[in-house]
Amino acid sequence: MDLATVSNAIAVCEKHLNDNKAFNTEIESYLVKYLLALICGEYEEAIEEMVAKRADKAGDPELSSYVRTTTDKIFRSVRLSDMKGLLGRFSEVLKETFGNRVSNEALVSLNNIANNRHDFAHGRGGTVNMTFRELVEAYEKSNRILDEFARALGVPIS
Image 1 (cartoon, helix red, strand yellow):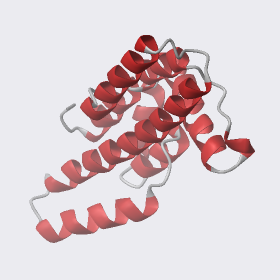
Image 2: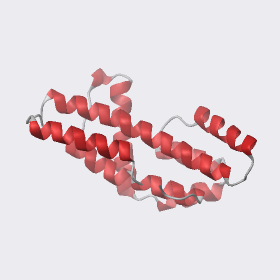
Image 3: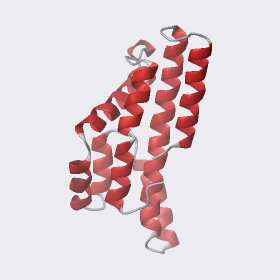
Image 4: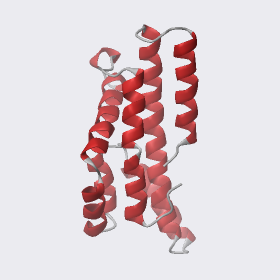
């Protein structure tokens, strides 16, 4: 799944780091923190939108509205367990199908992004344990999980 906002932000940050020879500096760390927050936020929005598209298939506007507001309240993290839990509210089959299709590589990458975002956002001195290049690699690998989530729900991959 292509998240244009994230792809554009990565390109701008990379250009800045290259133009200013800012790799391995405090600026790189700040940009990584920004991108971690952006990626997690965009993942959350994409997942919520996929659930809404699934609900829209029913053709019932009130049901769609209910699903949107409920998903917004119950879905709080891009961790795999939370995604599986959300799918489990539809059915155990969707949950298991999704879980079985997520590669270990994608899972490790997603956890790395989610854990680093959590660490800097909720304490631990505001530090992250990722470089810009590690973040970009983790994003590219973890992004595949969104495709599997869409497949599990039976909605188009955007």
